[in-house]
Image 1: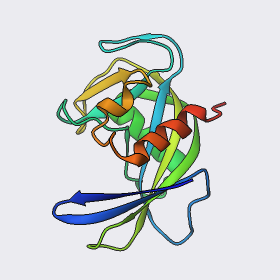
Image 2 (image 1 turned 90 degrees about the horizontal axis):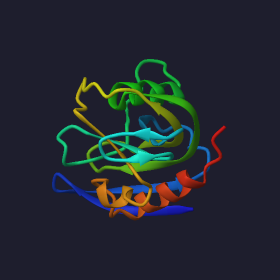
Image 3 (image 1 turned 120 degrees about the vertical axis):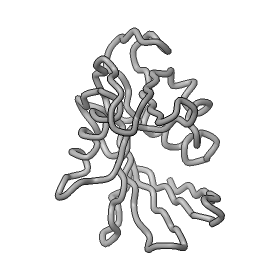
Image 4 (image 1 turned 45 degrees about the horizontal axis):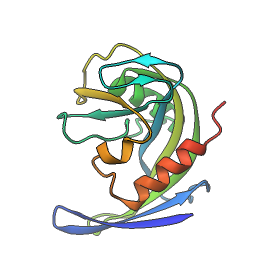
Length: 168
């Protein structure tokens, strides 16, 4: 399924085009990898108790997003996801699957891709490091109301597809 969203960023309109479950197109650089990360078992945290919580991270405690970041060197996307989830959310990726990608058309630069995964993770004690200072574990029903870009039609589709993903 294709979903588009026009985002106003720093005074410019940027087009995001989400594609569910298809292989990303060749020839465009992957600039970001992130995941909808579900806890694997019951976890008691400050914000949520139960299995299947979704992990969100924040630099300021107000704007929440999915853990993820930029590939480094010759990393494969799954390696980027595992490294970023560990660094930002203090969680180990146990399984992941590519659920889609987002093309970003920004008038200031050539188009690029952002890959999105569904992942099953095991959270550890949260120790803020790098740029991420906060982590929340929230129910699937709360994600869109907490995610800083949760009003985007892409967010709803991403959460739907991630919730239906078959994680080994």
